[in-house]
Length: 357
Ligand SMILES: Nc1nc2c(ncn2[C@@H]2O[C@H](COP(=O)(O)OP(=O)(O)OP(=O)(O)O)[C@@H](O)[C@H]2O)c(=O)[nH]1
Ligand SMILES: [Mg+2]
Image 1 (cartoon, rainbow, N blue to C red):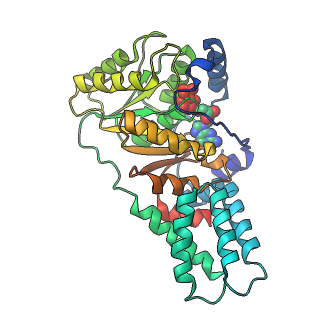
Image 2: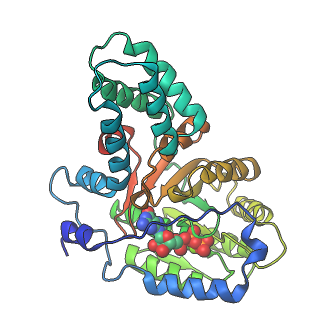
Image 3: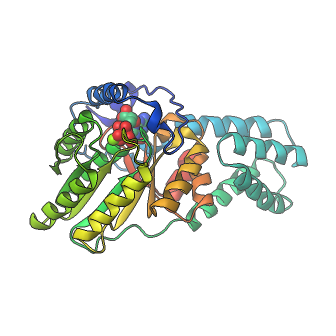
């Protein structure tokens, strides 16, 4: 199926899951979680076994633009409303602009910082519409400041541990990431260290097949730290380039999620001293400012090297990207813009801002 028909056929419901890290542990029974996982496995997008070829030139950006349409509509409609019929830039206009930024999830502090620098520059322009361009440039400057060089692979295997609360898109992102590395000619091994639900391993196995990656898994309820250790051991023996470890977002035991993740990290480094080389935190863009508190908690407890921000296609509040960039020293490495295997993009501030406006 062509990429354009795929976009047309896809209807993604607006999701608004407000979950705090760790809080869900007790609330959800194992049975409910198993049911959800089975549904997720059944819901996996079908008939995609490899990364689809990139659409014709400019297709990468076109796809990004298409998938950010909800967020773009909110911002551009808002800006049009603010500027329409106005001849001068006054305090009311700047206030309305600030409100629009805040309701787009840019965050109160970031919005106020942006308005301050915009108002300084606004004296040099005559038409209110020119504010649009200034806003764009300010946001781009803000995002570009925070982007680090993409992770270089120097170790073999390069071990990536993927963490985050339940349902944010860890397993899906792993499938997409594995496909990216495989397409770049890397030998990839996925490790199923989410041993909480049987269906989680099944879901990951399907993604591994699609991505053309190997998988290391053990029995349901096996010790996740032991699975991770075995995974790295297998990778060393099998000449693997990239290892990606899936972890649980919620536990059925009383062990704290953070404690379990620390244990996995320790066990990986016992097998390979520098590993994990990356700890990728997955955040769900539809959870808004809640994602910020998750980033803080995970970073303090485990140490995070980068962020994958998922479900940007499902939110009108694209400002969360700017908020995350401005609040932490952590770079956004990837953005998820759909449920298919080729819906993970390297985060590029310039493309992002152009697609958003
Ligand atoms: N629209 C959209 N959906 C996504 C994206 N990434 C993941 N999803 C969907 O989010 C749901 C949850 O994804 P999972 O990958 O199972 O999330 P998880 O973090 O592994 O969940 P747990 O294993 O329960 O902790 C699935 O239905 C995915 O298809 C994205 O970028 N866009
Ligand atoms: Mg998962």
